[in-house]
Length: 263
Image (tube, rainbow, N blue to C red; front, side, top):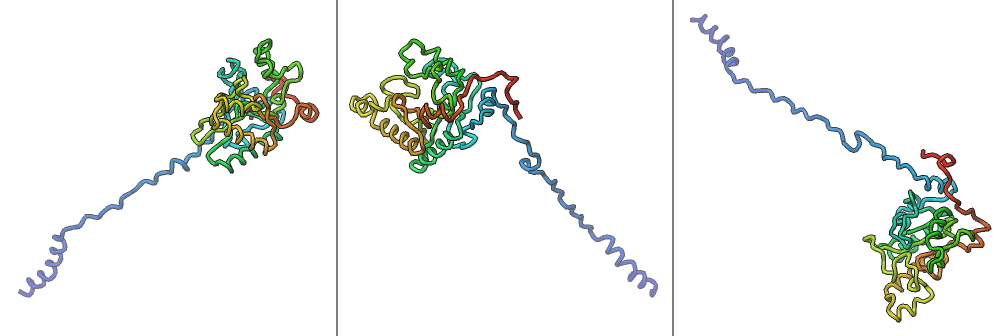
């Protein structure tokens, strides 16, 4: 009887332990570490090769407008056929270039405009123009009534051919051009700034267009530009005589062999 008691004492706890239900061990959830797709692999921005004309203008020390101030809009009208000539004059140029002196004044004009109307911006329709392009333009208008609006390359060209003139207007926050009475590049009396009061009285341009022209002239003049009487959009940085004395004219675009290459 004593032996049975000891057997009970020894084996019963063992049987109870063996019969106890084993709780499953929960495995830790393994969450894979995901790499941030933005920071994991850095893909360099593609380098856009410059055109032959842009490389030429770079080599002369002229500056790309948007590289200096990206808030200024550029839409070169002679880079398409939608201009008074009806022809494409810039074969490969999309950027607006200016001499550094003119560019400094243009950036200042943009700042002055933003101070008055933060929602507005200048838009550039033409800037530095090689003599080879000036010759194309002249060949189209030579012998017509439009020739009075184009500088004759045989007489030295104009301020565009030094990077010292810019064709410019104003756009709103939606990128829409403000009314100016005519389209840019309209060759006619309606574009003349010397007849604006009469044009408003006769209803050929609106009062709103007149006020917009005054705003454009104010910021451009305050920045150091001079207006051209026959074209409300055209502004010169200096006189033609000063340009001939102090600055280098942009001649015909040379061949590929004499131009610097893209980096």
